[in-house]
Amino acid sequence: MRRDGRVAEGACGWRRRDLLRRGLLVVGGVAVGAGTSEAWWMTQRRMPIAGGPASTTLGNSRQNVGSGALEVVWSGRTSQRLVALTFDDGPAPQWTPMVLDTLAQHRVPATFFMVGAQVRRHAGVVRDRLAGHEVGNHSWAHRDLAAMDATEAYDDLRRSHDAIADATGTSPVLFRPPYGHLGGAVLHAAARLDYRLVLWSLQMVEREFPDDPAGHARRIVADVRPGTIVLGHDVGAHRRLIALRGLTDMIDGLRSRGYTFVTVSALLGAGMDSIPTR
Image (cartoon, rainbow, N blue to C red; front, top):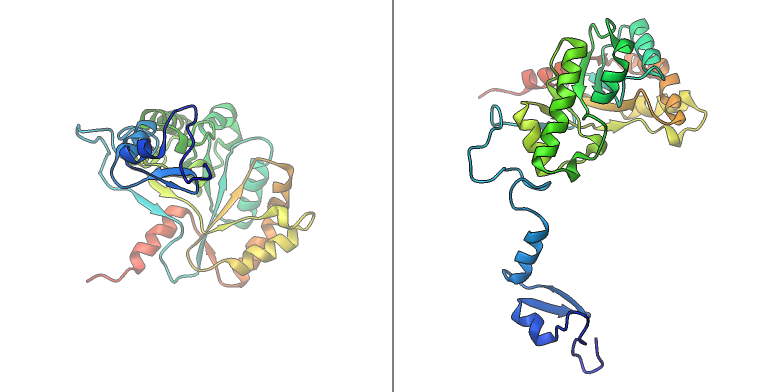
């Protein structure tokens, strides 16, 4: 910006009048868009209108999206003292057996959002051990699906879907995106597979309780409300063990508060039963 208020010519050779002709305003020496103008089209060229990461459509043809409906949930809609434990990123020999052993000991069902590549590699870890539990899709290799276009996102989820179905004998009906990241293409891919898209309303926070599994368990127990979906991990950094070693205290603490453990689908079903009908 020059002292006389004009925009100095840069490598692009644009002056203030050139910018204004293109529908741009100059604010603090920075060119910004001014309504519907060439600036808008410049932005659109960077982000495809259909089929790109932000788009929920594949263009003007008929949309192949299964039932045509997609539910996104963070928690269950229920006043009952129900809670769903979920574990992401497995399976792996690292800690998945520990989690399954603890859940079996206390007769607690859970929902495992599994990574397809992990399932292919470690199917034996969960074989014949998932009775009473539920398995959802957590992508093929835990890449950020929100950065993918519609074809990439669908191919990733489809590949993981098939791996989970082959290993468990049951096709997943739930999906949780890595990092909780959503884009239009992710929604479109999930709809094509008729998934329920499940996020969470409470996350285990192991880094806040170093070497204190009991303290971490008390924190989670105190924060649970009816319908809470709790996010945990059965693989990952070593700090994850804080939550897993405190899992028994977590279970006992929630039961002492009158909570019953259910899978995510059971939680969502209970929520539907509690919604008044007209």
